[in-house]
Image (tube, one colour):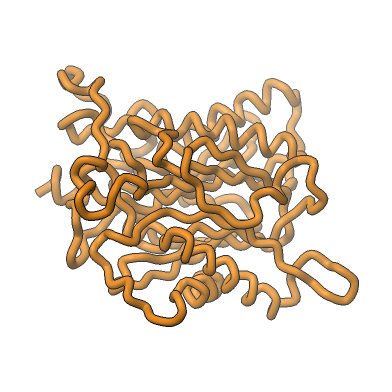
Length: 335
């Protein structure tokens, strides 16, 4: 296990990063079409083709998912992924035509210090194509792909991933681009809210603080620090939970809802009116779940903790770049 979402057989992930732009795209490619659904719990989402993922909609399986910076401009990235897959002959068959199904979600990174003067056409279609070309079973975390220009309250955000197995051998993995309004750490301390779920020192091994910070209950956000330069609606955490368990679209929808607990475990506050918090769910369907009810409850609980770990890893792995507005976790706490 690489502690990545690609520990699930049949899933590949690629990043495309533009350092001058301070933005990028991450795409997950399904080697075979997979059952998918989603759940939005933030107040400001930016999405493409998510209605298709509702359990009552016709198309059962998808070909890829795209997470991107760029706000609404970043939705073009899914077109690039779609173009790449079309050349591979992939897609939902409609008579003689195949249409690749590539739902997408975006985060806001337009005012993070990068050069967004791209002229006639946004760069995100090309970034989507590049991310699809780069898709493999290993990929970089932190300030790469959709996490390139991400920010949270007082720190750089980033791209995170994590994985684990249930007691019955089901694999679950998370992929997330963290650009939240709130904090991933407790008050003024370096300790992560996700500390109770950490495995193998994957985000520093600090655990919980010896005593809770006096101001830990006061929510801190990046709103005040950035209000004059970029306003309030500059946030969103977007993620994917994948599993090799066989799920219906309705079960995948429920798993996405349960996985949102991972946002609440790792970010304070989360699901605000100014975050577009969204989770996609994917099922490869390669393993049947025994003892269906108990197994699904465990799967949902571990989806939440795996997502929380991925969020903390995204912050922990962020790297410094020119013109950064906020420091990385490493710069602030490991000088």
